Length: 195
Length: 283
Image (cartoon, rainbow over all chains, first blue to last red; front, side, top):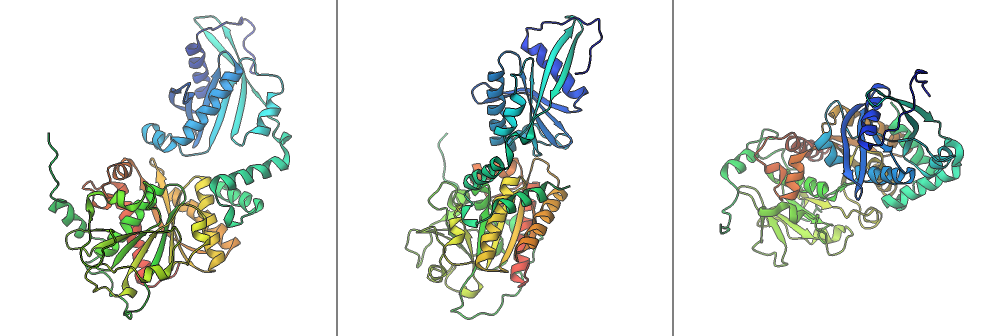
């Protein structure tokens, strides 16, 4: 965690919009992203607190301002909604500097992520995820956001789960009859991702 | 206000289509063929969008007719709302003459009629194609006819039924779409090694064409290493608001008045394909 100056006291920020604003500034300054928009969607069809782009990578940012479970669900539904409507959103929000057709990474910022979540999530998700813990410091006039990235344990799922992912993808795309094996699919995806 | 029947497509609209500079009227000389030769069949498949697939099928058939060649559409998606008929919209007319089967055809001034045959079952059959009514007044030799098969979206369409002479595969540039396109290539290549395949990549929202070119290179290179598949690249199909409007309003993109990048890219893809096929070149 980047240490705040010793004189900064902890600050309780109760307004979720204010927390989102602080996080947005951090996303721009530290992650180096260009912010495309705030608060897209709604709680029913999925929501994205901050939509940002950096080097063709789309960041779907969810800020946990209350319950981590709610934030997680919001991040997942937001991701689903984004993928389903990506072409439309790209027409509305995308530009040459901020294309929305690149790889997607889910970013979750939480005050108090549950213990061990950095081992659980990677084993369940095929979407790239970055998880951060944040704290607000300073004064109401001069708030300061301290952020620490939680290292995800990528190995917790193991090879068998990856194989399961490929099988699920084959079923979802309805390409079973093509007879592609998991190795060929993984090599193809790696070839497509190669620079 | 009361709806009035439309008198037809405007002269400006139609003349612009005919006077487009991609080909001289008449096109390449047709290859001499016998009357009993079978038609040239072309599968058209899109890995992600049945609507864009039908749009491409329709545009290919219209470009063929514009070159003075006989074209026919065999619609494997006729049972769904994404079939070619819905997209053809106001261009549809009931054919006269011998076709009493309740089928439709596309009629435009100066173009040969393009019959649309609804597939009775979603499996392509050359025998069935040989029995189809020819477009026009029967003056098209069967061997000069191009049958555009608007493929059914499931992979079973490619594993059953007869093989086509050419396969046009379109895909978006995301990994899932490319994987499905690759699966289609592998099926075709397994059934008929060295079959003629062509790839179209659909670009969204300002995605640069050279990025599509790079994606094609990666996919084609991988396909070459893992199969005998030889794939020709027909180019990038730009999907923008005009494309969405064309699909939504059933107004064929090739005939739209605006000179949109989407329309130009679609015409370019069709021209490149017909240049290759009519010249008898293999990918």
